Amino acid sequence: MASLILSPAEQDYIIRGVESGFRADGRSSLDRREVTLRTGMISQANGSARCRIGNLGVGTDVLVGIKAEVNAWTPGDGVPESSGVLICNVECSPSAAQEFEGRGAEELNVELTQLLDRIFNGPQSGIDFEKLCIIPKQAYWVLHVDALVLDVRGGITDALVWATRAALLSTRLPRVVVESIPDDNGVMQAEFDVVDDPDDLTELDGVENMPIAVTFSRIGRRFVVDASEQEEAVAQARMTVAVSPKMDICAVQKGGVLRGFMPTLFSEVLQTAQTIAREEFSRFEKCYAEAKSQALSQIDEPSTGSTFLVPF
Amino acid sequence: MSRQELLSPEGLRVDGRRANELRRISCRASVLSSADGSAYYEQGNTKVLVAVYGPREPRAKAQFNHDEAIVNVEFNVAPFSTSERRKRSKGDKRLLEISSFVKQTFEGAIQRSVYPRSQIDIYIHLLQHDGGTLETCINAATLALVDAGVAMADYVCACTAGSIDDTPVLDLNGVEESSIETPDLTVAILPRTGNIALLQMESKLHTSKLEDVMDLAVEGCKHIHKKLDDAVLNAANDLASKLGR
Image (cartoon, rainbow over all chains, first blue to last red; front, side, top):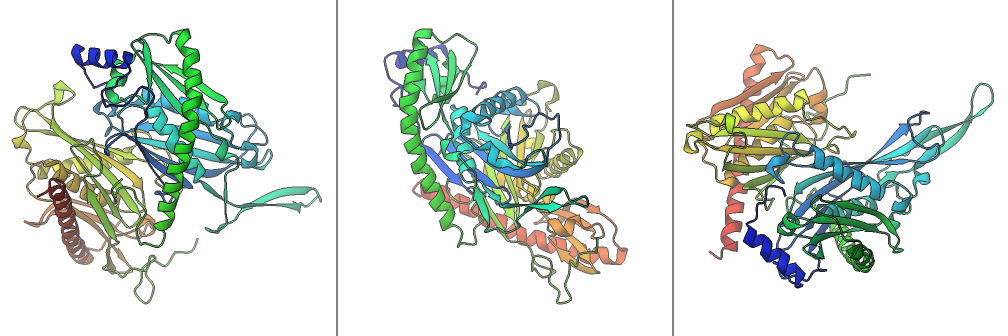
């Protein structure tokens, strides 16, 4: 990422190319790169996905694991009385870039964590958080979304959102039985029991309404979607727009400090985001269905379903 | 809590293995596109991903060495790796201990004088944890270093062994490892000479038993050496076929 240094000639080539509608890798300004998606490779997690955005096996590589836990509700910790919560955590591995070593990635981790939180945590994500409440004021589910960034080749937010979306879609929670038992004074008390049966699992509610993100990079006087590593190095501003399947805009974040996004471009960006999101949703459905059939076909084999043992 | 039976009267362990059996090992080299060398290694339910970069210019100029390369190891545990989610900070003593052990082991095995004024980075990710972290990390790092083409004196193969009810057992899993009365011995050897590169033991073991447990662990190391060798050969064949040779 930041370690990439381009010569002025290279920078000029990219900027002028984008302004005339050409990109260094042959795409047009609104083309996205190839996506590879797999789900269910981490057996100890409730849901998992690996997503790579890039052509010819080289690209941004993200691994997401979802772990669900039952938490006891305590007043004053900011959790609503009758809903569950989702906690995001993004970690950039030093295998993506040397400067991420030690605490080097902390700032980027926080930025990406907050962005993911803005997109997925709240009513805008479409997830039915009230269904994640087990007993109001007593117990609720916490969904921990842990993302591990293995490689960065531009378009990191889009890859994170793709992987998180796929991981949440593949998440299965154990069923919970709630019973009312009278206590010593005859007052009904609610109690719950998590069913310990690997076949008795439920999907999350409302996950199909989750948004997808489209990131625009302003280069010169124009913008491109799904910028490559080189393009990100010369981009003057970055804008991530999250769009729901109903074409509502769920989150907008402008990043990159070099220069601003012109207001004239902004309305164009929002409109383009919706058209691209529509295409991205159908592309996601296709990739996800493929990933799901792959995951199913692996059940019979002794293979652990890891994406690292087979070509990915 | 009653003591869990780790070895049944029939001589079977909690996961159905016999005392001298290793868990299933699957590994593959060259799994990441950006790293100079990388490997994925799983032994039973313990899964490790390693990326190796280098030899390259040291990042901190102050610590470089004029006559040999420095080895830098970073160990990272994914929050979803254990059955209960746990996020570990970068300063966790357990993690630092493991990265320091891996570093010491490979400082001896890598021919560092071949690469003066440079740095070799080994980044380890523990994706799933079920006992034997150190052994899997060392085996995976060996494979990744070979994949990166780093000059080494030999492979470094590691294996654990313990003793349950006076029977030496090979390759402890998470349940066996967490039981306090099971001694847990990790050995790493250089298979060609048989020299011991690393030796670590937890809990207590009678002196008369130590030799048997050691022998068993070394036997395990030799088996793992074969597995790693196969993985290297596979990666080389794969590359050769891609080059059309």
